[in-house]
Length: 421
Image 1 (tube, rainbow, N blue to C red):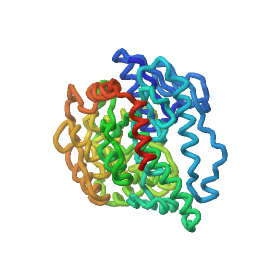
Image 2: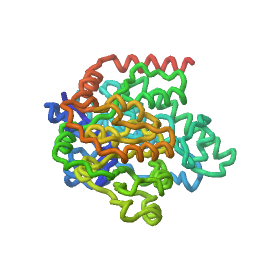
Image 3: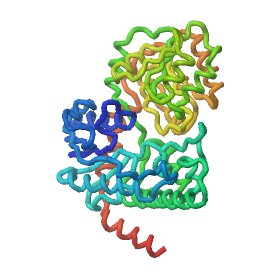
Image 4: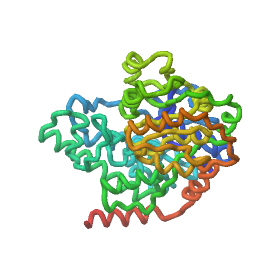
């Protein structure tokens, strides 16, 4: 099968979870004998893009994401034209490059891209975050999960004191965004990386046609992780590893505050990642027992996690399907996380009972961490199989790729219904 992966997150010197997922998926499909290429941005350099991101196939620079001066922050509104503009740009690039491919698979932040893809293209998109209906993609505001569904109230994410005019313009942007997304979901095949994401979209857009949507969790390259686990030295008692961007949504500040003075004397925290809160948190908490290691490449990060007593994922935001949790489980390490978003769904991938410890609050999370640190590190033999390995979940994705329907007739029918209603 010839597959074209598409993402505006690629290339990049430091790629996040979505970008890593695309590369992992593409490399695994190459290894299985499929022909895979990645279509991405052309405004981040054109030299050795594939090597930069660790992709073993061909990378195609295809579109830019240059900002034409939308001034959303200065105006204090979400512009109704901005996101459709970028979606059309990516859709045009897909139309230009899709010839000869059996399927085009988009992984990005603009769920309405499918509206601009020619109907005869076998198009699939994967939704990795809450950006199906939230313009910030996170549903996280003022340090708390946002459950407000009123479109005009979304103005608070861009202007603290939004008046009636700003609320009206933002409501137009949000309503248009959600309506276009629902049409794209009805028109083309869509994957949600957790059932949590599917439910969240239906909560915001009741009655949306999700008959063409599937839930397939994120996956990892288990043979690679298994090799890392087998080569790792014995876990070091007291070593705790936290991996992620050091910002408000990831909960590092709240975790460190809750853990201060409560951890046993042998505990040592290793925080892997960079972000806007790093300098402040390092100045307040850094020392021999709390080390901020900054950004580390993927092999180094895996090596640190593999020899840890346990891993902690203290995200306050509702993670859709945490790759960090899946990697910890695949490495055989115990993992403590908040029971938010799609994380509870990942308990099905435990290699042994109690490997994933879920807490309802940060205080409970620290308590569970202390209880686990009081016991010797668990060194489980690597399992021959892992439920979230790409090789286990790929058949479901390939089945979706091969699913054939008359897209043009279906889309025309849906558009007729929409205009008639």
